Length: 148
Image 1 (cartoon, helix red, strand yellow):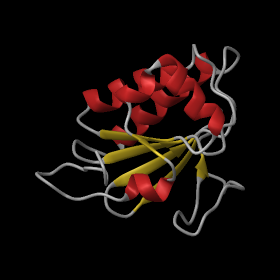
Image 2 (image 1 turned 60 degrees about the vertical axis):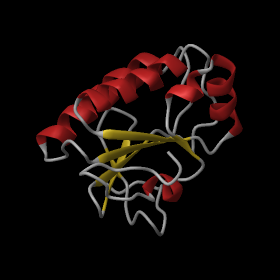
Image 3 (image 1 turned 120 degrees about the vertical axis):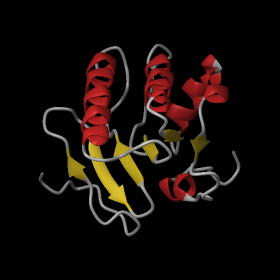
Image 4 (image 1 turned 180 degrees about the horizontal axis):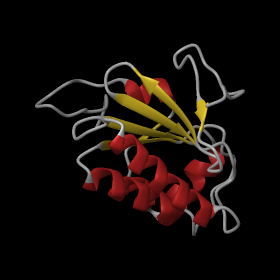
């Protein structure tokens, strides 16, 4: 997969998932960062749902398993519609149905506001950065984020 323009020092490389708009970065410690760098609105929400389901299927087929962590990184997403917040809860529920922990990076005001306005923020493990989401403590075979 080609290297994306999104790179950070903590995640050496994001790989584009063809035709999905998603970017993946495998990290040490059994965690995968899935980045979605577009607005999440009526125009894109169905594509996001399909892409996330496909990415999760591929990740479970390639070895991510119960007790591992998926971080959905929306730090480059500047807008989430109220309707699209349901898709984020669905992504969490689908991930957790496989026994995989889920955290959401809500670094932008647009994401945070939509989650707050709909009350869905209480249903999600939200962190301000990928680094904060990856801080974990291995307890009883599962990831536990720093404050949740």
